[in-house]
Length: 259
Image (cartoon, rainbow, N blue to C red; front, side, top):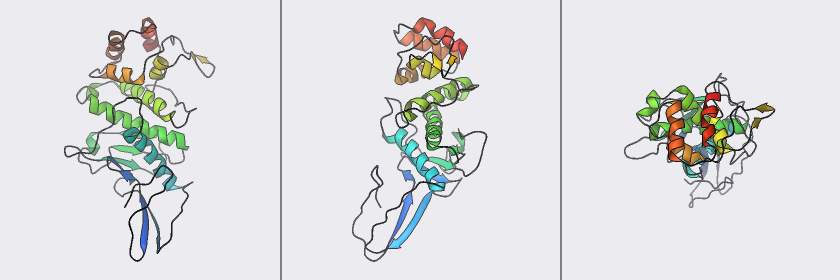
């Protein structure tokens, strides 16, 4: 077996007789399921002394492959100094991500208890009909919850939905835009744009003026550090003020009140 390059190429040692080509969507720290239990894998041809060149551009394996790319980004690539999601080790289990060929009102969800024994997927991803950037972003979003839980093991359970979803939405935007430069998730309810507002200097989303968005210049890692052991909207805001000197921090109250 072997791990492919970013362009999908791999090679392995000599094989006597015929070789079965199989793509398995996993790495050491995570594995993608085709639903709840089955390994997401593509079984290719059984050939002798022949390359297998296969393009994935539709269907279930485009879904699996896009989830894989998002997970690979969070676990193995540049994430702007953020903490990694839970890692596979002797004291922890591999992250299982279930890819469901189902239409759902939500694109995904995370439940730590569900995946505690490493049997059931802690993360579930739905809506394979979504475009690749949205599937990629959803994967980042749910892994951001897992990373948040790992960092704030006790505080996470008592954290408000507003705090948890706003943070995950912010990470979703920051990391997904490293691959899809124009990507911006939707903001509604508890899924707010407060993280984006603290990082960028934009005052508008489309043609909508954001009241109080005179905050800018924070980094995503600074906002994550300020989140440590905080479980309410106001505690996170106040810790951002206390930890950093930022010329726009006097506008934080108005910004947090807006969202």
